[in-house]
Image (cartoon, rainbow over all chains, first blue to last red; front, side, top):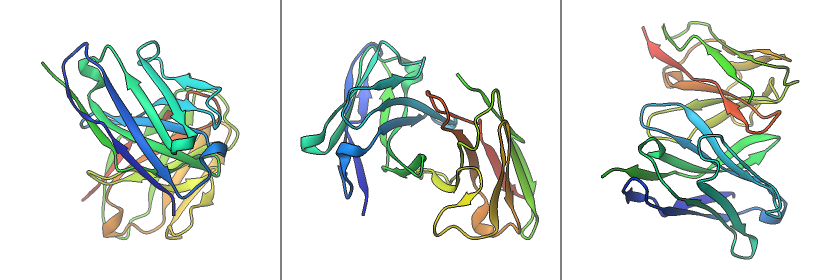
Amino acid sequence: EVQLVESGGGLVQPGGSLRLSCAASGFNMYNSWMHWVRQAPGKGLECVSTISGDGGSTIYGKSVKGRFTISRDNSKNTLYLQMDSLRLEDMAVYYCVLTDNGSFNFWGQGALVIVSS
Amino acid sequence: DIQMTQSPSSLSASVGDRVTITCRASQGIRNDLGWYQQKPGKAPKRLIYAASSLQSGVPSRFSGSGSGTEFTLTIGSLQPEDFATYYCLQHNIYPWTFGQGTKVEIK
């Protein structure tokens, strides 16, 4: 059974940093592109970042490019999202997501990031 | 980035109604489209993949159609558990993009 468990969310001041982790199990992480998707309170879904199975390719949404860094440690079955220079508009629930049959299919429970002074 | 225009943004319907939601892509995306249902406080759940393939375990009252730039999600007979927000997702070109969402409410 595929399981994705996010951790690392919390309260941070504007301009601060936070690192999210996603512990993955139940599938071969080496072969899997993985993603972070976020949802601001009361808003829609936004693709934040994507990483290839070997970590060699990364993609970022325009709103986070240059501030967020996606990475992975396949030996630890863990996906990361380093978030720097956080802004009020980055406040959201962040989901770790795995693709299947071409699109997002497996989602974690989400990690809440609150950006507030 | 590819823009996904979803309509309507909300709708009110009764149990048993047939409901249709549309997504239009700003450029052709073949059939690289999924439909998702989200209930408050929960992660989204995929209903349809590859524009028209029903996700395992999803009731057959849900169906998808379309290709290129125009896509439709249909709920054949709305059930009480279907009141939720629905999103389309294009996965043809990175960054993948969602529609704005359609909230289906009880009339």
